[in-house]
Image (cartoon, one colour):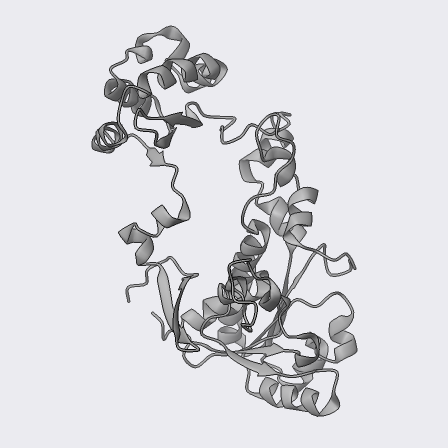
Length: 356
């Protein structure tokens, strides 16, 4: 699978996370991805986004490495005529450009789609912006999470608004752009023509509201912060502690699963009228939580985890990242590479399998 796009040439002028995550996708599938970084400004700004535990003398950060493995890096200041000419020479044989300029900047630099398509009419130009093609607002993921309702819904009841611990809107926008590019590549295969595809971070965020959006638009239920709880399902997201102090949670999506959970816990709650349907369990979730919590505290983690898996009860352990990457399934998602005589590990961006 890692050679599917071996003949594809990708030029990436994008920085930070959303755009580079798209470049990483194509690099992992065998494309030649050339990342353009401006030496005048120190390159991609995430090179400097270092944790306290990282080497301050190094030229990259863990953040930068998360989406830039497998790319060729070329230092070009596109505001310089000679270096812009070098860029144009690359465009002549490129299949795809990935950019995330602020509106108007690409035109000033003469790297916009209209200009580049005169050099290569088959070029696919893929761009990401914050609030639409005509908005000048600077867009960081935090701002998008705030503006699109995610922070309002995220957090516990009394915690105040909280951002998610990953830049999820950036990641989702990258996926949206990948889909657009794949459609553009299919269209190019049919017609021989290039095109410009663009994705807005704000549009991506709104599109990702999914059932929370329709809970408001159709049911007029205004989603508010309720921690991990699901507004439509119970028990779902409540956190329980076992007697050996492991934190677990359940996603009970059907009456059958609830009955099996009760069997594991040696309870007969499924026979009581207050808990016989999901809607009733949502209505009475606080009392239900107390009853389940009291019983779960009497079991060890291994006892309840293995019993739930045997009966197909959706159970999850709340794991930190050290525990996650001790799992064999997670180890299979790692990409290893050498740099400056050191071995580094990053997470692959691709999780699908492709069997031809």
